[in-house]
Image 1: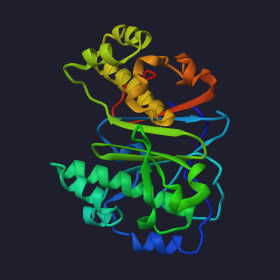
Image 2: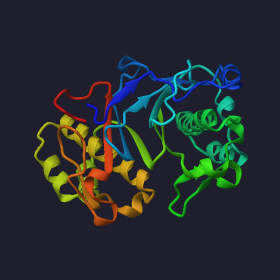
Image 3: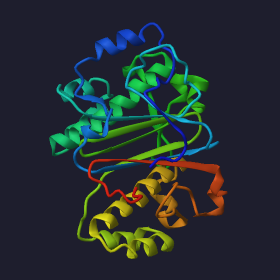
Length: 286
């Protein structure tokens, strides 16, 4: 299910000289654009949140633009999955501190997902900023949200927002001209799921979860709520400090805020969307 119009396979903006060379030089990266639901067998859920007019379509794009269409004003989403290649080619796009951080991760899957999400964000941003992906300079806000460093990217850094997310076998990047957030999760049942819901979710959403009898449907609804909430707190820039209980979403239908604290209201200020892949229940979740 999608909220906000979604345009599929549209590039972010026109190619400029050097972007073609970039795509050629980065062939062999161990990631590729998720193009169809069959590319993911295990169930996954994604959600995004953005500030602005819900009538402005969201563009689902490839990692590299392919034609001259100009979609630079539209918020964009990119989803990637593993491909053949060496993780070292992704690490080469990242600064040394991030390479060291990723090297300390225990599993190959974790190293791939973190490196892929961060490298893809730099590739996508480089096409907007007309600079090599390796030269993208990022800083973090007081709450830990990554953003472009205005010392290196000037005024563009103030008007270009992005968000990344990663989970097992799936990574995502969202870019927009207004605050934006994205979250992806592998949908699964786990023993303390309802305990987490009681601690984290608003009372309205907990009530909806308790009303679901089938375990698989309850897991799907849990991750609808979780991905929407994570995407929202990434978009606001507050992160977990905002508290997942300060807002609520409906269990079915078009995702939208049914309640939100005054600081981040009114509800219509924000637009949301969801996507699902794999063996998700076909009854409106997520």
